[in-house]
Length: 229
Ligand SMILES: *Cc1c(COP(=O)(O)O)cnc(C)c1O
Image (tube, rainbow, N blue to C red; front, side):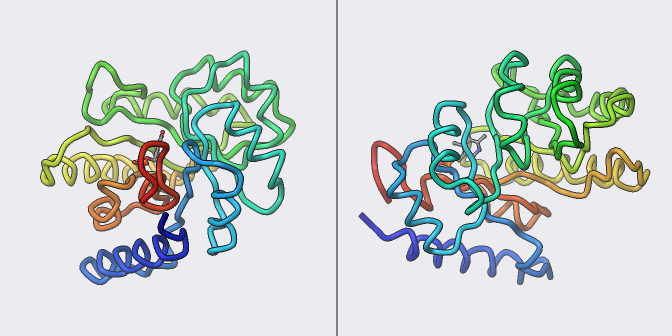
């Protein structure tokens, strides 16, 4: 099994290349280590290698890692969140990447005692199987959130389609960035919307070239269940 530190070095090199291409600074990019497939030990290795942000997409995995590591990481919940589970996680997460409906916003607002950093999950490609707000609905969705003082919209998140079509991936990320730009230019106090959570193991280089600020890397960093890279 390749050491996480070596994987991280490779990822950092790729980020550097992508940043050079589009004149960005690597300090703008946060790597979220997605540990959903791996053990506590492998997660420990990621933290030792310098990863400071961890992401989980399911509650069981989230609790397991959170209980173990607590304040040694910033915690990102990146999966679908059921409203009835909000009360259990709300005091533990630093960022929720999957705000995709008003009922969830209402519950987060009610259960938290302070503003929660949320990314709006956007279904850029319009695939029916995907969660998320349609691109054309994002701005009106965000304006409906202004009645919830504990919803702080820090950015937009998307999962790109499963494809090797580089142009389609680029187009997906670019559309999200353009939408982000429109929203952030309004300078709403409840929705600064400066971040872009996009890019996973297979497509993060393109995502960084298109403006990603938070990339969510699982298999390329810590490995997956089937094959530890
Ligand atoms: C699993 C997962 C990732 C990481 O995927 P990899 O391809 O293993 O890097 C990123 N984002 C979400 C929402 C995920 O569920």
